[in-house]
Length: 320
Image 1 (cartoon, rainbow, N blue to C red):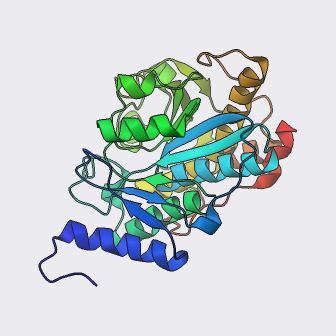
Image 2 (cartoon, one colour; image 1 turned 135 degrees about the vertical axis):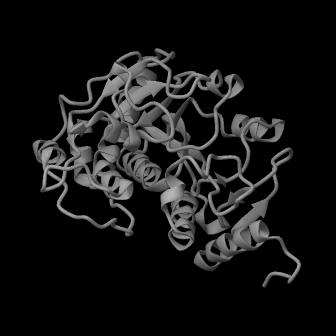
Image 3 (cartoon, one colour; image 1 turned 90 degrees about the vertical axis):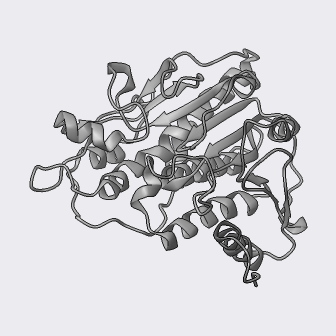
C-alpha cells in the first residue's frame, strides 16, 4: 500500500513491484547509484539457475512487444542450445514512470494506455526474472549502471525498442558488438528515429523491412548488418492501417526469428574465436517459407492485439 503523499511515479512503480512480487515471492529490488528512476530487480533464489558458464554471454536492452519477442527468442535459443549462449542481464524501459527519460511522448508508448503499459513492462521484466536473469529499469548513463553491466560481463548486446541513447562506454564494452533492431529500411535512409510508422505514411510505402545495425552514439545510424525480407504493411483494402499499433502487431512476428538468427551468428564467431563486430548477416536465406509467406500477407484486422506475442520454438530447427 502506498502512502497518501507518495508521488504518482512512486505509486506506479509500486504497482509494478507488487505484481512482480506476487508472481514470485523472494524477488529483490535495489537502487542503482546515480539513476534518477527505476531500479535493479533480482530473481528469487529458486529462480536463479546454475549455469554451465559455457557459451556467449548476451545481454538485452529491450522493451515493448518487439523487445519481448526478442527476449523470448534468445531465452528459447539458450534453452535449446545451452552450451552456446547465456542470457546474463536485461535493461528495459520504465514507461510507467513519467519521470523516466525514454521519449515517452515521441515513441511507441504514446499509443498505449496505462493499463497495457503496466502489463507490457511487467511481462518483460518477469520474462527475464523467470529465467534467473536480473532486470534493470533505470538510467544507463551512470557509473552505477556501468558497474552493473560490467558485472554481467556481456560479450554481445542486443537492443530492441530501448528508449535511451547508448553511449560509448557501453558500445565499446562487448567484444562481439552491440546491435539494434529497427523496423524500417535504414540502408536506404528510411525511417530512422522514434516514429517509423510515420515515415511509412509520409512516403506512401506499401512494405517495409527490419534492419539490424551496429549501434553508434547517433540514433539508428550505425552500419546495417542485416535486412529482413519484405513485410507487407497494407490492409485488405490496400491502405496503411490508421492505427500504428495495428501495423506494429504485423511487424512483431519476424523479430523472434531475426533475434535467433543474430545470436546464432554471434555464437559461431565466438566458437571460432573471432571477436569483433559482425559486419554482415544473411537473415533471408534460412527463413522458413511459411513465415516469409505470412510476412507478405495483408493485415487482416483493424484492431490492436493486446495479448503478448508468442515465439514459435520450431523456428530454432534452422539453427541445429
